[in-house]
Amino acid sequence: MSISYKLVQKKHPMKKDDPAKWYAVPNSARPLPPKALTRAATANTTTAPIELEAAMELLAAFIPQQLKQGHTVNVPGLGTFRITFKSEGVEDINLFNAGQMIKSARVMFVPAKELRDSIIRDLRFEDGGVLENKINYASMADYRKAKGLSAPAPGGGGSGSGSGSGGSTPGGQGENPLG
Image 1 (cartoon, rainbow, N blue to C red):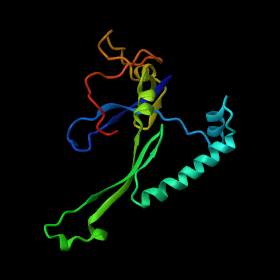
Image 2: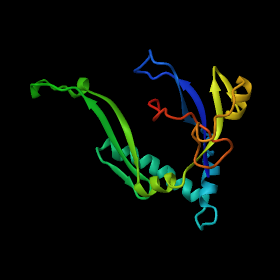
Image 3: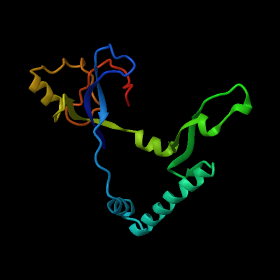
Image 4: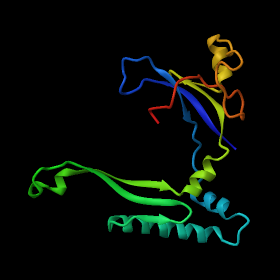
């Protein structure tokens, strides 16, 4: 199975004077509606979709309750939820005011190693197009054609993981600092 990506030109937020670079971003599909999700997840099992739906609703109510009590919640096979936050520091402990000094509370999810590995293992990437100046090109080949660009020399442009159509990506750009 392949993950579709789209190339988008962006400036690095910390290096605004540097020229924009092309970055691959996931070409995300819409999520399945809840009923379709439970039907798909329970296919070829003895679990009824309504049972999975009820279990997911119970879990969705249970996790916030546990997190608000200060617990970390480990969902076997899925991962761990926990609360994180930032805090200002004080030299004198008597001056600490939680309401003013604890900030940016958020829920953190860390996937279970098995889940993460099952997703990442054998992952392939597929050319999902180029987005430039609010214009979507269906593929890198379509972008090159519209811009009058020739295809890179063999081995010169970098390629995807061997899957998809025209998985070429610009080489030497490093990791996407923008996500």
